[in-house]
Image (cartoon, rainbow, N blue to C red; front, side, top):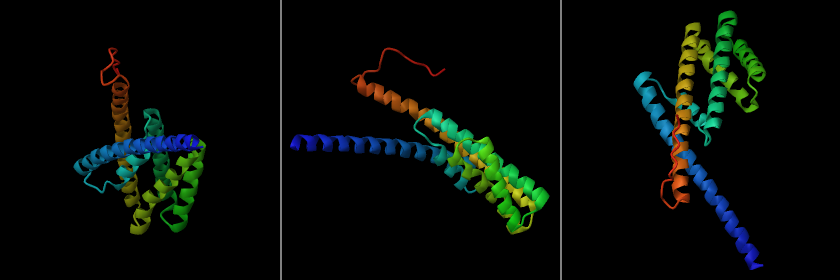
Amino acid sequence: MHFEYAKRRSYHLMLLAQRRLQGLRYATRILIAGVVVWLIISALMHVDPLWAIISSVVVTEVKVESAWNAFISRLLNTLIGCIVALLFLRFAGASEWSVLAAMAVATVVSSDLVKVPISWRIAPITTAIAMLPAYNEHSRHAGLDAALQRSAEVLIGSAVAVAVSWATAGLFRLRRGLASSGGRPSKTVHHPL
């Protein structure tokens, strides 16, 4: 009886340690990506880095392939949202109803083009972000500025997240390889290129 309890307890502790390690890996990636994004946005665009940092967090993944897929999904949905917003601003103006209708259209377009349901929310959010400055300022030009800035921030934040995921995936693999070989590097060298 005590043996079974101890066995279950050690298994739960092992799972907790694995989750903690995975959380630390995510935190490391998010911290690195956040610093890089903040520096790039403040140096190049001189704007609030909020959307670029949000994009870097959303795209950051343990596996590089997953980060790449998140990057593509985020970029496509952002572009869909911006394009729908600009079309509605051009042809319907910036009213309460046009903003809401544009959000609905962006969702439908996203659901037809992007096959990841969780990411369908990005397109209407982007549409609202691009259209609301035009609505608040009664200026279509404000919507164009918001759409261009949002697209640039998402592209920068997402690209940095993919790069950080790629760079740190190699570091974590190297560290695991050294740990399993007793601290000695393996004799086979794998080059990424």
